[in-house]
Image (cartoon, rainbow, N blue to C red; front, side):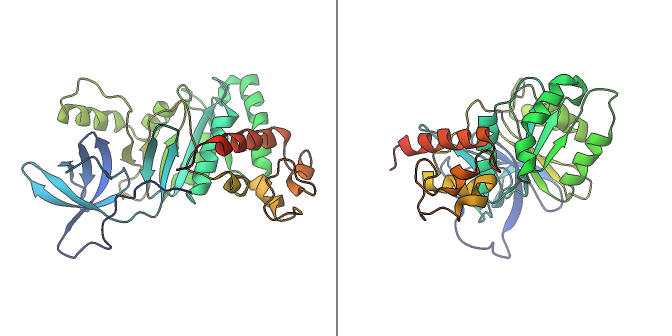
Length: 313
């Protein structure tokens, strides 16, 4: 797997350096939060290897704000890569929350890609299905997620509708406690509603960012960090939506090991380098319909063909 630039230069910070947490990025500027909770706008010396939300950075005071001098090493980064560019979401994550909804109908291909990307980055994933109040539409969507629950993927129901049973939201909050969580989701799933329900001050925070940048309105074009508690132990990172989720950073032979239901059978194949597409004695193909759902296997085949056809540099 080809990793994006880490932005790190050097090892641990020196004792006399000022440090901060990146909580928002906007072009050639980023917001950092100091260890005592102050937030200030910092200038980036260049766009190359720019820090991400979730990064720890070293900075120097400059005018009314500061200037980033370097980014400290990351423990992980979630990103996607297509034929044109690499897009990094955030760094140093504990959990990726993939938010889906009963309506609009979600794409299993996009869901699978997000889960594969999280697995490749060694980040836990949680799938949340919103709009439980839609009845039959929710039941149908929940059934589509049965193969994921079968192989151990954590899946939670959710209802953000006004006046709904708060227990589903409470169950979600328990999963977020003490963790840094990135929220991924296509338009219409209720991502903004979730952010504002969990963090009532989120709208005020984005308004402050817009005013500081002399912007008339704020749209989610980059990730933003919000604390879920006053002790600053649990955090939620809002992320921009996406239409496609490329995985060009992966080699085709990595794919099966990043899909848990397939990975459970990979070691039983006759050939150690089995592609699980056509070889005799393939335990993965033998498990289709008996431990590996047909749709999950089709997702694997389609993505394997896509990665195999991608140019390698």
